[in-house]
Length: 182
Image (tube, rainbow, N blue to C red; front, side, top):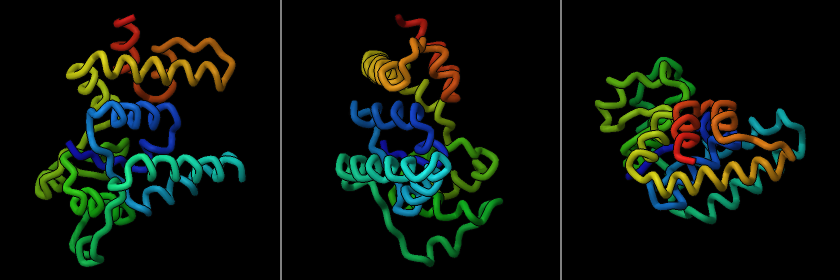
């Protein structure tokens, strides 16, 4: 399954690590565009110059891990598309150009289901998408969750609990389900 990841699900660290961890486990093939990756780097500037530098390093690692993930398209594709927010047409264009099955985004209102279905793309929020992957492959996603939890504890020095970490990361259903597995 090919999945286009919108910037808003790549930039938050825990959410990104859960999604890319699931991709590393072979649960889906991630897709993005150069523009989506650039939006991630620019958003990380809010953390200061080190935030952008770190994001660019992570972008290089992700691009290396998934060299076929970055999709391109002719401008005519984007020109024919309409979305409530014209600034999001590049995301839909990337999904179409990459033959994505699913577009994972937090911006549900900006990607009307009917428009996406006309293009053969389903839409999912990251919590629902990851919860579905957990139901399909519980062992794999439980391992990913444990790795993300360990890294959050290591980096923050705090004793995070799974449910609280996932809730803070806007993945409450996933957090509740993962906490119930341990």
